Image 1: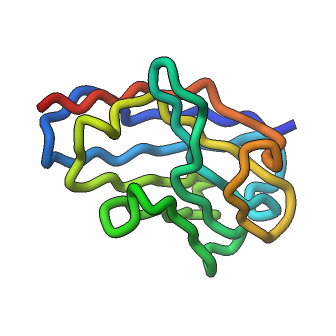
Image 2: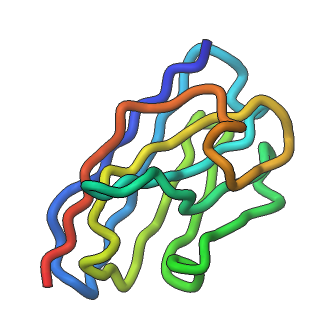
Length: 124
């Protein structure tokens, strides 16, 4: 089992920045690719970003490319999502997820473990 705990969400004005963190425990963190997903009210969960287990490969949705940066620190068992130039449409609950193996993917069903989520609200 892998336990994931997100933090860093909050309320921010449009154009502002937030950094989300996801702390992992329970298994060897470096064995897992990691992803960030989000779900807005009334919408399906969608892919945001993912990173391979050693951090060499990253992927982003078109909606956040150029604004968000995913990174990881395997020594701290933590994955981060730096969110810049935030827009009201980024408002959602953000979830981190872990997938056993080296390859980072973009589909939620391929991830084995999920955190409880952290709310991000961007005001206009």
